[in-house]
Amino acid sequence: MPINSRAKGKAGELELSRVLREHGYDTRRGQQYCGANGDADVVGLPYIHIECKRVEKLNLDAAMSQARSDARENEKLVIMHRKNREPWKVTMLLDDWIELYREWAAGKELEDGEKENTE
Image (tube, rainbow, N blue to C red):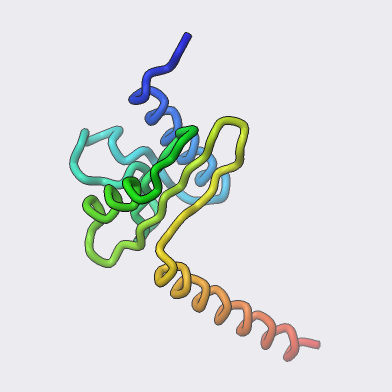
């Protein structure tokens, strides 16, 4: 029995939220309480606007445009997407990725410095 796109979208959002909770983040489906109010598809990651796509053929430009129009100021746009039998992937703007990477790398440098001081 085929699944309609709205039901598949809901199922994808619930699945993604569950995966993020398994990683320790308190997330939930954005539309589940308030209806269509411009919330991200999955909420609970501060400063991140998640557009969730569970499709076989993804139009990344359209998804990014939708995220851009729905996101609040100072939110990083991410498209979290997957096809059937594939792992979840994340697509985002390069400038946003660079900012996140710089923060991650700075944290790694601090960790490495602390390890050197304890040896």
